[in-house]
Length: 132
Image (cartoon, helix red, strand yellow):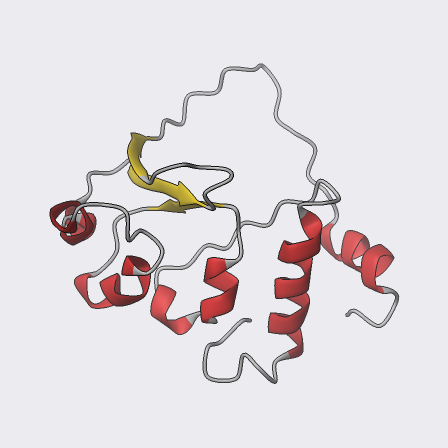
């Protein structure tokens, strides 16, 4: 979808980068989920204002270090062994002053879920009918 080796030429990578950049001004949030951060376009990983980084394989730490440089080295090196439900919250300095470890729970605090948007419909309305 957004491979690193073809990211400059990939239409989906360009669209996603543009959506992430412009989306924050139009109340659109994008969630990028991967188990292999070193295979994703670098710019796509750096653009979002907020990032949740869960346990990752030791071989993938290189790319993540550039996103969480304000953390102590021992905490960065402990990323592969983070317990389930624990992540590092990081982002742009105007949103999150410092990267911090946090616990994430799956306990719902409301009786209803949110509405699921039609992503492709939103893309077509934003970019025009040439998005398939």
